[in-house]
Image (cartoon, rainbow, N blue to C red; front, side):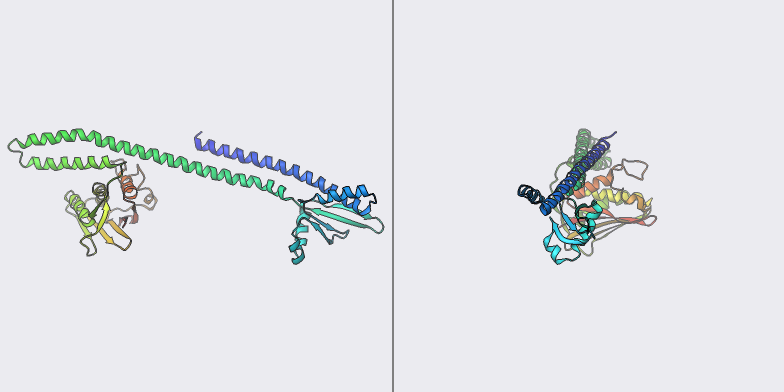
Length: 379
C-alpha cells in the first residue's frame, strides 16, 4: 500500500468519524431543544392561567430565555396567529410568504407541541419549531471538515509533487554534470593525441577532421555541464544561430532532404539566449525532423519577430505524430525510435522553459504529412 492510498484512507476515516460525531451531537442537541420547547410551552400555559406571582415570574423567565430556537404559533385550525419568536421580524411584516414558508419548513422538521386552552369549545395553540443556529452549524460542520480535508490533500499532493520534481531536477543535474565530468578526461587526452598526430607526416587531411569531432565532444561536454546551473544569457542574432545549426545538420543529411530558412525578410533578430544550450535545442529539433523523413523530404524553419515575442517554427514533411502521442512527446522515456532513451525533447523543453523563460509545444501534426514544433521566446 503506497503513501497516497494510506493518506486517502486516513482522510476518509477522518471524514467518516466527523460525520458520525456531528450526527451524534446534532441528535443530542435536537433532543435537548425539543425538551426546552416543551418546557417553554408549559411556561406559556402558566403565563396564561396562573395567578401565582412566583409561578408567573418563573414562567416569564423561562419564556424569555429562548433566544435561539425559532417558534411559530398557530391556532387549533393551524392558522398562524402572528405570534412568533427568533425569526426575521422585518420579513415577517413585509413578505406575506415568509411565515407560511417557515411554517411548512417547521412542520417538516418536527410535529408541533399542542397547548390546550379549552375543551368546550375546543381552543388550542400549536407551537411549531425549527433548528437553532447552533444545530445548523453542527450539521454543516462535516461539510466544512470535508472541505478542509480536501484542501489539505490538495496541498499535500502539490507539496509531494513539488518535492518529487525537485528531486528529479537534482538527479537530472547530477547525471548531466557527472557525464560532463566523465567526458572531460578522455576529451582532454584526445586533444593531446591530436597535437602528436600533427607532428606526423601524412596526417594533414585526417587531423582536421578529428579536431572537428573533438571540438564537437567539447561542445557536448559544455552543454551537459550547464544543465542544473543558471546559464548566462547573451544577446545573439537568432537568424545566424539557427542557420549555423541548419548547416551543421544538413551536412549529415541525405541529398534528398531540402532545408529552408524563412526569416520573413529580416536579417537580424536579437534575442537573449545561452548559445550552447539553444544550439542543443535546435539540433534536437532538426535531428528529430530528419529522423521523421526517412531520407527524403523537407525541413522548413521559420523565424518571425512579432511585437511581443519571437516565434520559431521547425516543420518537417515526415511521418507525423499520432494524436494519442502528442501530449507524450516531451515526457522522459517516450520515443518512437528503436534506439535512444527518449530524453532529447525532454531536455529541449527544460532548456527553453526553465532557462530561456519561453514555451515549446507541438503546433500541429498529422500522420503522413508532417509535424511542426513551435518555440515562443519572450522579448
